[in-house]
Length: 261
Length: 354
Picture (cartoon, each protein chain N blue to C red):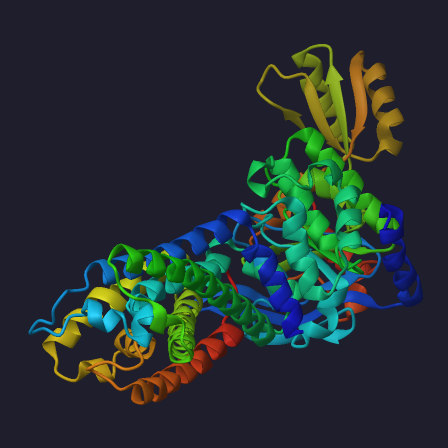
């Protein structure tokens, strides 16, 4: 049953415009952060602890750009997921789906898994392109890349990629929940991005320790393998609890609410 | 699969199940949105294998009722069955139901065929059935075009094709002719007839009463969420007093004939202003000869004499204008489904002409 819903959603996700648009946007984010990160690396360490060319030459240097893309990737993923779910209400297509699949929890789970695999695929493709860009930029800035392809370097890359995938999925799930609860892709994207980006940033700056509790800050910490605001483990646990609670609420609302759209 | 093959499944099932059961039965079906009562204690009975019309003004509660039947909206009160299964167990009957609800809504960027595949995948329906359904509604050649490029008529057809996907026993169509030109309406009408011929139960809501009159055998009329009538369309029309329409050579003859007719104890009136030559006489065609004779004996020449058949539109406006808006059916579903004298009698007493 869930597989059918998954397959059905993928028919929509495969459409060329959405596919190219999403993959190009996500790849663009990774490319941008990779290029900016390596281009901005300093020759000598400064007081602020910014990345240096010497640090880039370490085994972990390859994944530095990738790590910085967490929030931007999240914003794109959030928007795509909110569009896919909120759009069903906006277009009025949800009623067609529910007549063919009356088990609403099954429909939602299948759709959710399809969107997540779509986004994880996009992150993988973006990573490949980002890595090529990293090598090109390293060459331009004369950074030795021997350590990048070592076992340690590849292991670190795998971990960063995993963290980034978790973070992306977290943002996407929030997007889906916003789409379901707000029943409009436009409102969900506008309200969600406003809260996750500027509002959270302002609160984080204004309230000490807020980064330990705010979703976007936690997901960014996960993408970076831990941040000054929250450790990776704490962020993962807190965010998992948030998402589990939010998914249960969204599922309950989705199953119980009348479909009048 | 060929279009004809698509049609055989519902036929087989329908024949197997064409017993004395009703496709839809509701009892006291009620839906309240906050303070607004959208559907008020609706006792609905749709005979299996019929084309049933569902009419009512905008906001009468037709779409809300349809949504409740399809499990999209939870009733506030009441119960019912669809294809023998309780309303609350929509997953048991929806695989045998096709529906077009409040117009065709699909993903604009996907082709018609892709839109159908999205729905087919959900029910585990194979692609060949998608192609057969598209062929059936005449969209085979345009199936690969994006939905956004479709005309309104094509969109309605795609909606019907989507409803046909599961090979339904019950087809619920909400305003399938909305916005169509006369040609499109005629095509949809022919299509609905063919579905009924194959054994499907078709439940169709429409504002176009002339269309309903042409294709439906059974009719449900609601207003402000309450049932006003349900029964056979012919039953409803027959309940209205028959009329003879007479045209005389000049207005004076019309006035004279009016006096003569009323003198026999029959009701009659001149239609239009003082110079009108047209009379309406409450009588059936068996009195046409007497009327003609009466006119001739008094030197009145009739240039036109015909029986006027009531239209569903007239019956509808009468029934909805009536201040007493209580349901006119008995509590027995069998009576309510038509063939009940009680229902017809009540209609003729309440809504028939004085």
